[in-house]
Image (cartoon, rainbow, N blue to C red; front, side, top):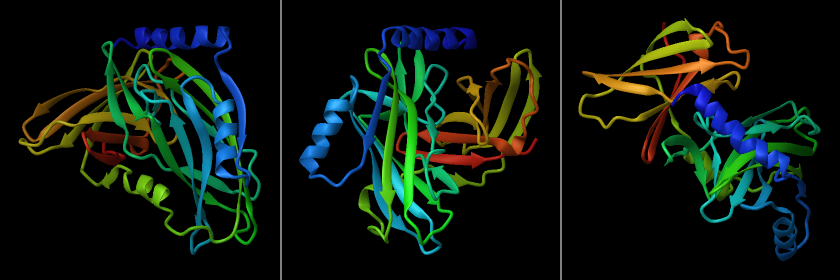
Length: 286
């Protein structure tokens, strides 16, 4: 899809929503009331398409890190987006800056699904997603006051940008290997060390990357999704073809300033999506 057309579609989706105040500014705080009361609070606060947003407490690891998760539950048939959502998707943004006793937070992304609609391809999750997070405390012996500002998009027949704050106090050993979080952790893309060669060349408004990925001649052709590990940037839908035992895939990276830039091949991340399987390639050789 033409990148200008795709960006125009995204702006067209977001502009009227903002103009008509469909963005939801809400706060959901995890407190200890009975489950029925929590459900009532969440249901009354959520915008169209949202059922609830919450933080799930997990456990403390032997090295002092804390494992928790963000759960976003949507109304039936609604979807939200993966970290690399596709040309017309809405990239999620998470901010943990208001947290206390936190050095860093790393979000773990379960395997997404691919959506095809009206000639556009996006990548994300349908109905619900649980995103595990690994928290490194400043002082592991003290509680963690976690605050997460979540900005993301949800879509059905319309797309709605949502802004949600979720908070929780995490302390004690927790529930080791909490099953909901463990299920999400186990569905992450599998890291692979395939020897990938990349050709990187400047284009008028960014950089074009052509990757040569080893793939058995009789293997089904996966969908490659390109991104940068270090920073979000708009990436075109990959265009691929096979050459014997190689999958040759090309994508274009366009930064906000719409100009060529120095792309580090070791910062490149390619995820191969194939139905129920997903494989992640970190870095390539140029």
